Amino acid sequence: MINSRYYCYLIFLTMLSNVMVLVPNILLQHRFDGALTSSLLAVPISMAFIYLFTKSIARFPSLTLPEILVKSFPNWFRFVVTLPLIIIWFWAGSLPLLAFTTITKGFLNPEMSEYLILGIYLFFVSYVACMDHKKVMYTVEAILFFVAPIILFILCRSIFEKNFSWESVNDIITHIENRPDYDSLSAATYIFTGYVNMIIFNKSVKSRLNVWYWILIPLVGTAILLTSFLIPVGLLGRYAVTDFVFPWVTATDTLRLEYFFLERVMLVFIMLYLFLVLLHSAVVWHVGVGLFKSLWKNKQKTKRYDFGIIILFCMGVLVMRKYLSDVYMGQALSAWFIRIRFVVEAVLVGTLLLAARRQTKA
Image (spheres, one colour):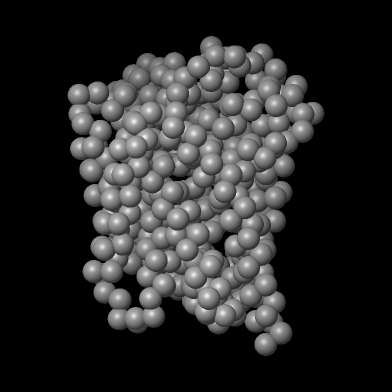
């Protein structure tokens, strides 16, 4: 079993990888409604989910979710729970990949085929997703330590930009009395949802968090959530921010680093988030592969099973790319994924809580 800090890395990876895609677009669409209130409400709700999940799964050291379900519930219940989770994890890895393929072609290499770009990304994601648990965690740690400080610098640089409109930010803050709405709440809680990957990584990672992690997670999550929502407003304006398909890309293109070897911050920002998005997709597909393999009772599962499942996932992404030719269709599907994911996550936490209680009584 490796240190519990890797549990936190799963949470921080999801937080950082969703600053640019999925979450900000939904929150910005509801910026004059309940987005800010929902964002603030999402923090205690998510921390409650993390607390219940962590306390429950800690009662089953070195067991994955399918093994817990077999131990605590009838066999048919394992299929009922596992099948929707496989679909959710497939979506969680596929949608950011498709969005970043569009970003890469539109802002970095317009001459390159989207299918070629997507194929390169799928190769990297597939390779990492087929590693064992510990190697995946070590890869997450290495990339986070390389990428996170630079992203933190860019976020701080954005706030202190001379053209940053605090008037626009203050205008959004005045709508804090508006009621939270479900779309914004489900999007804001997605920032914290990396903890759910422990349903497979519990096999190799300690799930008990010390008190400092319980302080750090909500602080970092709140900061990332608010900056991912408010910085594009400050840089692009409260009304114009939704005129752009990818507001964060356009927002960072307004920044310049005069004494840096790459003057345009946008190029650095996209490359950094490319690492994060690919890694995030690899991690969630690794979890999806573990869930998929649990549907069979054969204990002698070789790497061929992993590669076969990954090939199915890759084919699914290519089919999605063919039929989601319009970027707005992809964003609509992402919004539906976020809504459904929130319900599935709540049910999953409740299921683990019930399993832990049965374990205590036994």
